[in-house]
Image 1 (cartoon, rainbow, N blue to C red):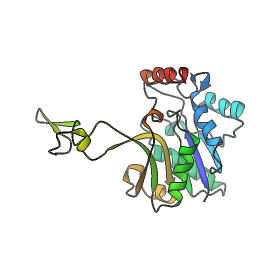
Image 2: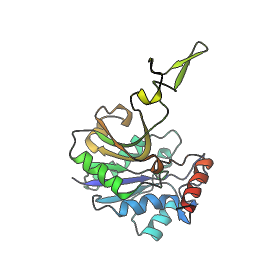
Image 3: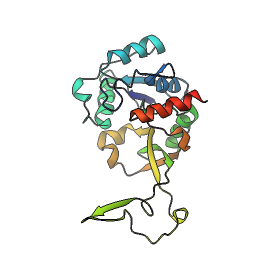
Image 4: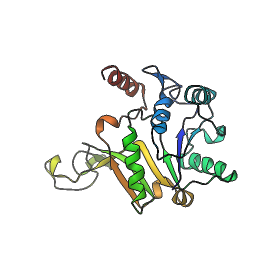
Length: 227
């Protein structure tokens, strides 16, 4: 089973400008994903999908990676889906007669993942009949208890229930955006959110921080400065 690790790191970012090459504890953000991918012996190739010259220079000069293509700007928009980015990378390799069975998607905004989490996810995928393995963490916000929708001006539990204590509710999970292991065949036939056979890999909450806003960035800086 051949595994292609794709790290998508486009140039433009609204929440944290220039985040993919912004230094976090003196390391470019994209570098955390590159470094942990290079530690895994289960990955056959690492692909940086980007339209950023800054990211390309970091990948080549800091981490001795080849960057096989520059992602087209039309696939680097706010509305561009992860599915389209992954398919673009797959088609590039297949046009050069390089085939992969599995995509490992590592988003740069998750700098706290560990290589053992990645290896566990890949091994879980190998032994399972599934479309995708995704990393999650248990969430204290629960649709059976304290998550509400609004209808006609009134709020009600997202899932109707009679639970009076959160600890009695079924566990619910947050997809933390850190690790996705995806069947190439499944990806070619359906969008990520359409996949039915999805298996969770639970990560501790402290490793599940996703950097989307400046306050997330400040929290990450605090964590790293106190390790």
